[in-house]
Amino acid sequence: MHISSDPGIPCLPGRSPQCSDPDSCARNCVIEGASYADNGLAVRGSAVTLRQWLFNGTTYDETAPRVFLLANDNINYEMFRPLNQELAFDVDVSALPCGTSAGLSLHEMDPTGGRDGQLNPAGAQFGHGLCDATCPRRAWVNGRANTDGTGLCCAHFDLFQGNRHAVQMTAHACKSSGQASCNGQACGDANTDAALCDRVGCSLEPSFMGSPDFLGPGKTLDTARPFTVVTQFLADGNGNGNGNGNGNGNGNGNGNGNGNGNGNGNDGTLRRIQRYYFQGGRLVRNATVAVGRTFKQDSPALTRDLCNATQTVFPVDGQRSRFLALGGLDALGKSFQRGHVLALRVFSDPDAAGSGLLYRNAGPCARTPPARDVMNQNAGAAVTISNIRFGDIGTTVDPRNGGRPPSNGNNGNTGAVSAGAKPPSSSGGSPGNNGNNGNTPAGTPPIDVPAGPGGHGVEAGWIGSGWRLSLLARLPPALQRPASRLRQAPLSHVAAFLVLHELTAVAPLVGLAALFHAHADALPLRWALGHDGGGGAAVREGAARFERYFRRKGWFGFEEGEEPARRVTGEGGGEELALKRWAEDARYRVVLEVAVAWTITKVLLPVRIAVSLWATPWFARVLVRMKGGWR
Image (cartoon, rainbow, N blue to C red; front, side, top):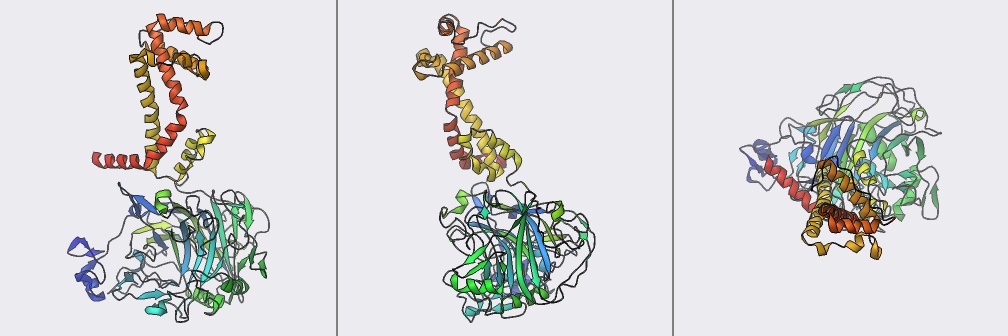
């Protein structure tokens, strides 16, 4: 967003002379699309990867992208009405540590993004119109310049919020129907009765509610691997929806597709929001939850009883939930009937005791909080979300086919992604151009909630890709753990590490060989022959290898095709032979010098790895600057 007469001057509502009020901003400001790549987004097929930070050549910039799902017309948002429906997606949170979080959420936003043709001609295509129960006060509200600090409130549902240590879903209700503007206490900073919405909400988070071993790396739901999330919205009333349809879509930036389905389940009163997972060919049911000493759910779900139990036991930042007071699931269900917009985001919250979640001690993060500067520790933080699908109960996954999407009618209504803005704490937005994401299925014959095994997780994008794992697997076991952060590192850091690893091998090899050749007394001959606990066997193996190589090349006086000397094995006078050749054959002296240098370099492998890892961030910046200079 910049001044129309000068692209170099940003439009800052209330701070730029040309943008002192909504009317002047509309006259003088120009909005342009933004590059997906420059804003931490990568789209591949039905998968979108969101990165928290990007390297700018010197340091890391926070991108914290948020995107919304567009309808087939690529103009308005896709509207979800999820009563007696289910929504499924595949997710990989393995690269999200403590202090970061991925989010999929539903918001009662205007389907046009507030587009009116005058003060906001852009609308949904540029990611405008964000509202939620925190009543964010953004620089632009529904695309209009916000010069007086107005907040925009609406009910929303955090479908999935989490990292590799904890995952929760949270329901939020509001007093008003649809969107409402707020100022002062009505925006709910203190979550008092004057607030229009309940920013705390009612949450279900198994790790915090009695099942700490359910979710995490290597646990029942292994967050080191991708998994499928299925959420069902169950309501009383006419909820026997059905559908049929077909469609197609692609993910090459601007996407389109078609599909159709029908159902009559978007009626009634919302009673229960339940969750289950698929991973590695099996169904994973949500873990049992317990609240205090009196409440326990063996089949956990967001219900009135759970919300009643948690609102007094689990305050957040000293604030208690007002979800039930504002109508609870009934109010949220009515909001769902009016239609919600799907948003995807990644963000960082280093002040939240490392968790990045609503409950500050969700999962193990509070027990072992990371450094406050999360970025320095986890610059590669990212999430990949793929295969988003929506339909009647039982239509988004096929338990008979490993939890995969049904084979027919599940690729319709492929929407574009509208690039949105940064987290509520940031000022301004990052409007972007259109891309493609997600599948909203028309139905297949309904499948009840699976009772048997099934499951499927699809790894998408480049996070944790196989070649990095292969590289780590080649390291000695003792070095694999300290080097494991390469799995999450940016490509520039991986390249820097590989170059440093080679340099730390070549430099000591050449340097030591030259030293031994220039100063014969510097060569540890007794150590080389195996005395004093030395590396005799390794040196002799190296000497035999280098002698064969030098003969093939005809280097250092060796002649190609010349018969090799008797192998120095250390058996039957091997040491004496080595000493004799050392004294009489100048060519062999070179062989032994190189072999000793090679053996010492191998012994220094742990030191070389440590030095390479330590110097990688600095060297990555050097490589990026060099690349920029070559251009």
